[in-house]
Length: 275
Length: 323
Ligand SMILES: Nc1ncnc2c1ncn2[C@@H]1O[C@H](COP(=O)(O)OP(=O)(O)O)[C@@H](O)[C@H]1O
Ligand SMILES: [Mg+2]
Image (cartoon, rainbow over all chains, first blue to last red; front, top):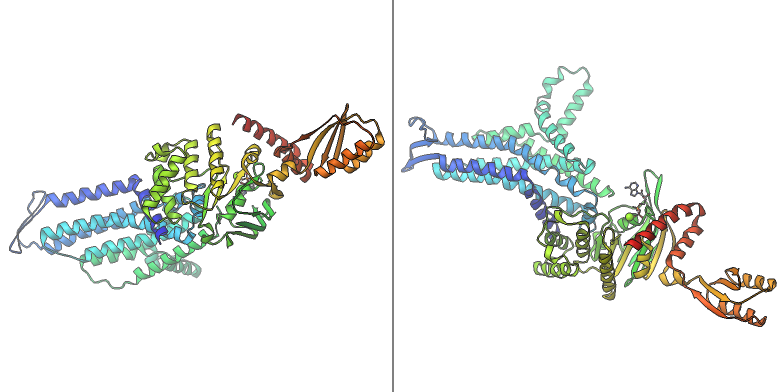
């Protein structure tokens, strides 16, 4: 356990040494600073008297504070789900291929730690840095908004968890690709392809009409059930932040199972590999 | 401590046989040299022992654990050939990471050991510099420090003097001898004969994946002793008798060169000479160098490879000279 933690810790440090996460962090900080200084909410006796964003005062009348908070939070969650996810994938893609570099992997493997634990530590390190960045922004905005408006809207925090979970699932797939081809560009492309085709696969019944053979249908079905369902995940994130009811959580646990499956495969191939 | 039985490894679907049924036993407390020209399979052998590479067939154990188990590597240090440590770390951080992976949980222990070893390899003043900025020699010294940080019982060194200047080489040799004095076992890969000869107790000679010989350096360098006997012999019949009772014989203007396996054999030859009233003026032993022995061994393995080997030999010999 101490060894997994050590791998995790140094993976975190390796990620910090990369400029991507620093950029991520700076953007988050600027966003937080904006909310902190530019947003002025005037509350007297628990009731809204006035609100000013960048000095402008939106209508005093008929202003729903709760809706205002949820809109901002949805914006943040969406930005994180798209931009943040892309950035995280980009920044963590090289972690596994780097570990497998000649002269480095030999050294790691010569230590009294199993390959499984080595990979778990690496995965946990990547997850830690991404969670750190996501929650820095989410917790930060949540606190600032909540304190300033008095609206404590917990579902926003759940969206943070969901974003980290979908990253973990995608990252398991990237780890598998990284082990198999030892190339970060391929890992990035793999994850982006999954995100890109996810809405298509979700709406595959509309494509069926265009397909001549039944075999393609089966193929699409197979792909749908074997890839993380990022599109539906995104909808769940938006719905939960907006306070709308989430119809089914099935895409979430299904994707998590697929992630576990990918990670299991990655461990299996890592054990079989020679360096 | 290290036991392998019929260890084999093939690459490219059997086209490259990097190791062919290698059986080696290494006992604790010595410096063991695995010797062989480049491509002989030395690195492959070490990697299998450390679980980095899987064997195609055969068994290997470290401390009686099969090499597939992480426990086998508990008391093991390793300096890989052409190692790459995380570049964004400082020298001290590399050591800390290494120590934690090796199971040193106490932070104070780690910093104490790191300080001791960094001073030992003359890298103390560079401890806070990112290793990106290190030279090859500095990286090699850090690598050495890393390999002995957790006070392992067994240390694998793959070409440890590679890219190190002559003074550095001497320092490394002294360090290894000191470790041996502490009772540690060192497994050293090298293509430099002179180096192995200087510090190893026992050597195994590997050539094209085959183990040609495993014996003590002493045996290799003295097993076939060559003596020069200064005596004038005209008697052809006597020469023939001597030829038969020695391993090899050469004569040249009043000198007789015999190769024998032991001194008993030598003395019986002297008896023969004296019984014929031959006057012996002097007897001089030649100490055979490991290099002679190495060439002989490999020559015995197949004369076809010999030229290729010799070119390798001269290269390493001149390297050893320069270095
Ligand atoms: N991963 C690999 N794939 C194919 N051939 C390899 C691989 N590793 C080593 N070899 C081959 O195995 C042989 C032994 O290599 P190696 O163990 O590195 O020799 P040495 O360390 O004695 O120089 C060489 O012929 C080398 O080309
Ligand atoms: Mg080698």
